Length: 247
Ligand SMILES: C[S@@+](CC[C@H](N)C(=O)[O-])C[C@H]1O[C@@H](n2cnc3c(N)ncnc32)[C@H](O)[C@@H]1O
Image (cartoon, rainbow, N blue to C red):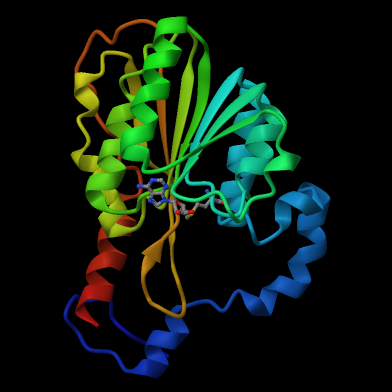
């Protein structure tokens, strides 16, 4: 099969399907291999991230062993499980917490409601009591304005120790625009942002761009220069996004 990636060129459905790797073909072969690396409980599908994203998040949690963590977007509690395992205390934000067995999370404070309203109160409390927030996962509201608001609310935290912020689905064009619109530069404690710390993928059924992790780092000392947001996989994102929009 040959095809060209020139934008606007039409390709037929067969060619389009050939561009998408069907991971299910490989699943059987690699499932045992994955079990060598990840506990079974972290492999389960309730955690809505791909294998590489899980490994990345687990590596960071193991390195940080956070005193306090925040998760925005709990859903079934998949990503909350490792966050709770590695942290001393966790605030978990979601519109609903009815899909989670709360009794199995003894160190988690479940805060139910719209994160745009609920997160600022906790950030204020953490600032007033000078408690060490060291890890945040933003994976809740996937609208552009919602992601931007969640980021800007977290940026109001005044860190006493390094704070690592992960944002999921940074390869989704709507989420990505929210991440890029956020006023990162107004926060003096932000020192590093790579919107493409891990790049995302194309979902084979919908042909939509999803997944990907942004990593941002806040430090206790103030930044001395203007922040530049790294977009290490922007070329890949633009190519695939334009290609999908034209076909
Ligand atoms: C993709 S899921 C989270 C998946 C989870 N982090 C995981 O990987 O296992 C997104 C969650 O965010 C919640 N959500 C969406 N908008 C929200 C908002 N404005 N405030 C609070 N929760 C929100 C949804 O109810 C949903 O449960």
